[in-house]
Amino acid sequence: MNLFKRLLKWKVVTLVIFSFVFFVGFILNNISKDQTNLVALVVKSPPPPPTEEREEENLSVPVRFKIPKINIDTKVEFVGLNVQGEMDVPTGPDEVGWFNLGPIPGEQGNSIIGGHSGWKNGIPAVFDNLYKLKKGDKIYVEDKKGMINTFIVRENRMYGSTTDVTEVYTPSDEKAHLNLITCAGSWNEILKSYSDRLVVFADKE
Image (cartoon, rainbow, N blue to C red; front, side, top):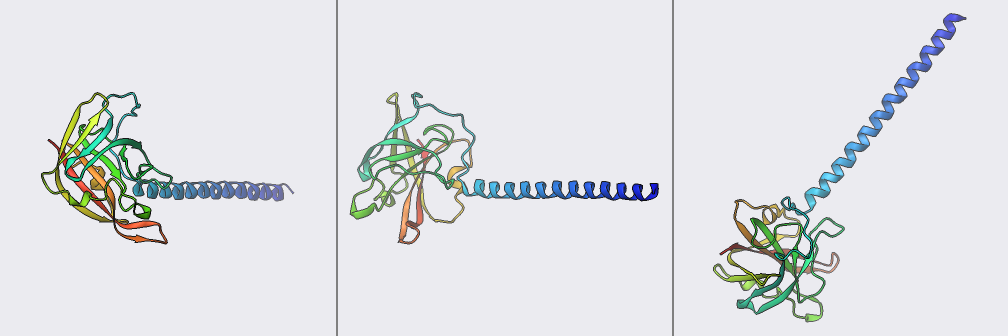
């Protein structure tokens, strides 16, 4: 009888240990999957450089944006990330949006400003003529203090909507840059999006 009890007790202990190991393995496996999903989301998101949180009271933030060559003189909105983990866009066709998770224009790194083109019903949008910019053209960004940072266009580049755009957000040197982004290419009625993105790369004067 004692032998039977000992065998029964051993089976119970073995079952408990097995159940615990299985449970831990299940939890770790799910954590691994969650991490994989998180990594996928991070990779999908624009990878801005580390930056301190900025308040709107900061006098260095941009408030006015001008490109005389294509008759742009407009105010600057602040945009972050949308629910898809992508850079958000300004609310209307007339304004541009500064990506406020990256550098302020004029600071070291790649500052990003986006704007619409090809607005619905033929309404003019701020970056309709962005493609006309050429190397050497000037861009002006004014901050709250009235100080103006001038940037010189270096090149224009087209990207597919699913292309890795890490280089647009990540600087390759320690200088100050300004990159402008807008939609381009053909309109996809199903996805409600354009096929490409036009990026204008500019460097601080």
